[in-house]
Each structure stands twice: as structure tokens, then as C-alpha cells.
Amino acid sequence: MVGGGTGGRRAGLLQEDRQPVIIAALRTPVCRAHGALKTLQAHELLAPVLRRLLGDAGVPPEMVADVVVGNAVGGGGNVARLAALEAGLPVSVPGLTIDRQCGSGLDAIVLASRLVASGGRHVGGAVYLAGGVESISTAPLRARPGPDGVPEFFSRSRFAPERHGDPDMGVAAENVADHYGIARRRQDDFALRSHRRAIAAAESGAFHGETVALPGAGGPVSSDDGPRRSLTPAVLARFPAAFRAGGTVTAGNSCFDADGAAAVVITSMARARQLGARDGLVVLGTDTAGVDPSLLGMGAAAAAERLLGDSRVVSGELGLIEFNEAFASQTLACLGQLGIDPLRANLDGGALALGHAYGASGAVLVTRLLAQARTNPADGTLALAMISIAGGMGTAALFEYRSLE
Image (tube, rainbow, N blue to C red; front, side):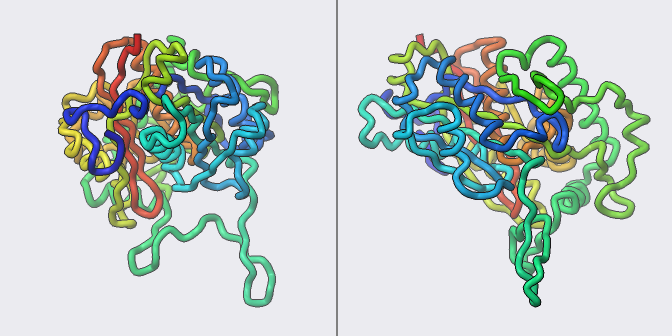
């Protein structure tokens, strides 16, 4: 079943015309903000992904019921609709843009899965395009009228009332490091492993099949530009604390802002078979939870813990795990709370090496899970995607890789 608090692999799946399954997933290269993709607006990042997805999955454009897209710092409007039209979808296909900040891309996929499960008027199951996009490079400046009418610029919106605390992301990462005793050396070691894994994955071609090349400022962009070969323990040790005097969170063990997009094709198992899909990620359950905003990095653990409990799945049964590495401190703390050895997560590196394209990052996690499952296909592999969210929230989704033939 699909939904917070009621899902469950052991409880069985929905009937085939309502059981959500992801049959295709793609992403753009993830590149540093104000870098290789700086000239592309959000809809221009996303449209090529949507276009390729339809071709790869063999979905006629007119069959798409809706395009659901997450976006965090864009200029408003409806980037889902804009990107759908830019991609060449018929004007009859609508679009919906959602904002749950860093969780937006994963939450868009969650919402689409619930729409599939609801059935509605789509006999045999509807087809949705769902994911996320962020162009931090082209995001508008933010300002509000001051007392004298002069614009007062601000860098981010408030996520929680003052009485709850509303720390900036880096300060919250320091709070987590302090609260859970995550030492500087552990954070640096984790960050270094992320970069090395991402470099190894790129060299092996692990990202090739999931990545859609884009026109960039200096020519075609076909690969991520974040992983750093020059990093060593000694180099990481030289980074000063970035957010608090005497702290342990540095630019070296934190993610960097990035531009990028990712999306999936999600439909019912019955429709997937009609389309000739060979395999996919069956959605077993999803959950979103809230936590103390001062420890906002722990939101993913709260959501995943509840989801796994309701699904009667223990962490040791998970074959694939993708966690958004906004900061090494929160990643280590969340994995520790779930009883997951950090070596088992983010097998090809994560956001510490690849970057964090806010609204897209949750969808990147799902794209990575499907690619990894297809690398070593084993029916029944359980896969978990999870992401912590500004304001003290987290979203998690549990999948099972399955042959549909």
C-alpha cells in the first residue's frame, strides 16, 4: 500500500491497476551553481529530461495525466506546466508545482504515486511524470517592502516561528553534530569517501545511462562537475569551521549549491506491462515526518524509522539506500539512528560530491536507486530514498525492485 503510516511490503501490494511503479528515471548533470548550467532556467533544465523519459519509456505524450514537479527557490508561477510545454507535451497535459524545499523532488514522486493508487478516471492506471528541478543560478532575488517602501532583500524565507528556533542550515548541522556527538574526523572521512565513490562511479560509466546532456555556457554538459580528485584527509583537515566558531562543519564536509533536474515515469503495474516495461521500482510505502527545527537534519531518520516500522522491514533488509548528503554530520546521525552502516549508503557518492540542487535532489535519489538496481538486478531488492527538509521535516520512500516480465 502507499501512504504515510499505512504502507507495508508484508501487508501485500495493491491491485495491479493501482499499484504504483517507477519504470524510467533520468537526471541532468548536477553542476555547481553559477557554473556550467548557469544560463539555463529551471524549465530549460527539466524539459529535456521529460522529453527523453517519454521516449525511453515508450509513453505517448497524450497519455500523460499530469506533470508533478518540485521546486524550492524558483520565481513562482508553475514550472511544471512550463517545462511540460517546453518538452513538447500536448496543451491538454496539465502541470503541478509543489514546494517542500529540499524534499520537493521526492515529495512530487510521492504525490504522483498516491495519485496512481487513487485510481480515478484512468482505467488501467494513469501515467505521471514526476520529479524536481532547481536553477539556483537563475533564481530571482528576494525582497520585501521595508517600512519606508524601499525593498529589503533577504536570502531565505522563515521556516519556523522564533519560539521553535529557525537556524540556518549550517548552524542546524552543527546542532546535530553536537547533539549526536559526530566528530570532525568522522565528517571529513565520510565526505572524502563520497567524493571517491562518485569519481569511481563516473569512471566506470555508472552515471552514463541516467544522465541527459544539456547545452551549457561553454558547450555541451554531459557529466557532473562536483567530485574533487584533489581531496585528501590533510586537505579536508585544513578547512576552517564555516558556520560556528570552533565548530566541526566545514565547506569540505558540507554539500555545495547546484543546478539540475531529475524526473521519473510512474504508473500502475498494469499500465507498465502494457507499455512493455521490463522492470521497475514498486512503491511499497512513503512517509513524511516532522522534528525539532533546531535539529532539522534528523527529519529523514524520523520519516524512515516510521516507514520501515509500518512496513515491517528492518534496516538490515535494505539492499540499496540513497540519502541526500546535505551535511556529513546529519547523514551520519540519521544513518546511526536507523542502525545503518554508513558504508551501505550512497554507493556511488552523494550530494557532498555531486552537489545539492534543492528541489531536484529528492528525485535524483530515486533516479540513482533505479540505476543501481538495474546494474545488479535482483528481484525483491528493497531500496530506500530519504531526505531531510528545512523547517524540521523529512520524507522517505520505500521501493522494491521487481521484474515486470
